[in-house]
Image 1 (tube, one colour):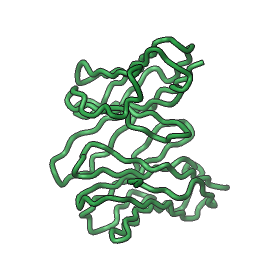
Image 2 (cartoon, chains in turn brown, blue):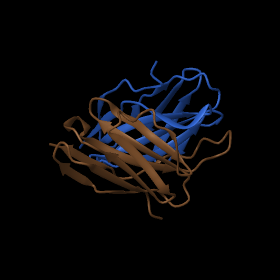
Image 3 (cartoon, chains in turn blue, green):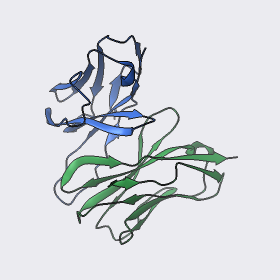
Image 4 (cartoon, helix red, strand yellow):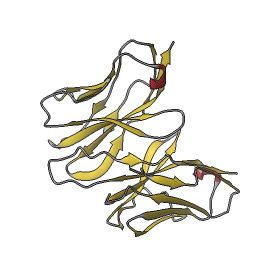
Length: 118
Length: 115
């Protein structure tokens, strides 16, 4: 089975440019998560969706960041305008929901997008 | 307060020996799940093992086992017979029933396996 697919794997761009990161979750998964990983702050949850609806975006750093999930098989994370401090590895993850009392469903991560803003 | 604490930033282990990576957690929710992930230098996050708060036995997956001590709120990962390919960052994570789909991750432990 295909895992979570992210693109691009690497992105290098200049400050001020728009950056779009893409994610295809595992088919059938109803939750999708966007994380950012840096040495200083570790792994941070930015936003997550349930059935394509954003549930919690409290981790989105500021208005320059936006995320969409137009359908069950595709999500984007956009940064506009980008800044050097946005340089990080961005992960997308997906999971299945379970009923109360069942917590064993892990989050499955994509390979990440390594973003460098010059 | 930190939900997940990993106190070992880095560890070394000799190849073929066993190693324990520490994880303590903080929750007042009686229902929760604990997870370990491996992140090799290539960057991907790989799910290793899961332990539920109501599980009576410690979870095992091949060379990985989870030493679950509920009263101490610890969920240590034990890797038996270490291999060079085990060198990686290891993250402990937790989800609670109250906020089911939010995972809390620790800061990670960097494991180096020496030949």
